[in-house]
Length: 207
Image (cartoon, rainbow, N blue to C red; front, top):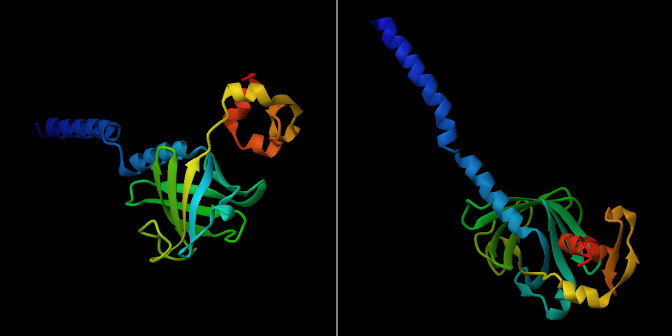
């Protein structure tokens, strides 16, 4: 009888061990999925609409030409057509506010981690960053607290297929883009073309 009970306990324990992981996802797996979802929403190019640097707002003239592009977990900041900064992004949307870190590959904080917070609302994104080594900001402002940089971005709209057809001309881009010969709009450089994956797909398919 004792042997029977022992075998029954072993079998029940083995069965519970097999089904528990499948039925009870861990907190870390949920966090990874939420981060993946938000990263997918970031993909594309965003135009800097407003900015505060150490409490001082930038003028509309200073904001001209500044954009940020997300491709996978890679982020690239542009000042016009010039690359200003590149980095790798990690997100933690389980925190309040949602947390973001960028590990900078170049720029003023090369090889450093910049802690920040972010908020996504449709085609609007807000971010606020602290200096490397400082505590993460808790508010979207650079006027007080640890935040030294606050930005609001608007998603850059894609050109419509009809507009592309009107202004398109034959243009062969650098083979390094990996897209071969495509039709590019007048006045749009290969660099600008490379910064919009969806436009590349549309142009290569003829609109």
